[in-house]
Length: 96
Image 1 (cartoon, rainbow, N blue to C red):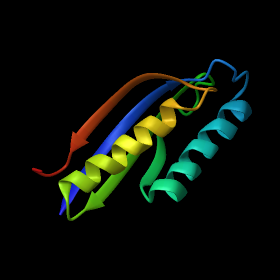
Image 2 (cartoon, helix red, strand yellow):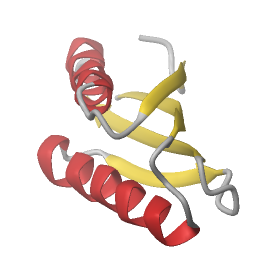
Image 3 (cartoon, helix red, strand yellow):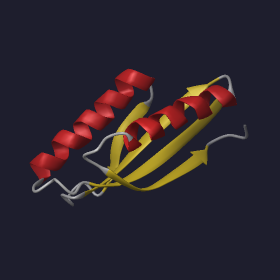
Image 4 (tube, rainbow, N blue to C red):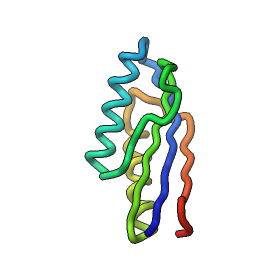
């Protein structure tokens, strides 16, 4: 079993309230869950209206499959024009 997670730190320049932020975060988290079958959640900066930290995790019998899924999530997040990616950290929770 291979398990990895990424944490994506985002800047949301168009968010002028927590409500604006929540709409973008919900779309990203729900979209990633549905499109990539990953576990996804907002993991930090919940009360800051122009920042967000999102976490995504994948599990598979193949390390390559986990990498491909998380790379897909990463590229998908980068493709969203309403957010600016500040940083991405990947962590393996096993030895691939």
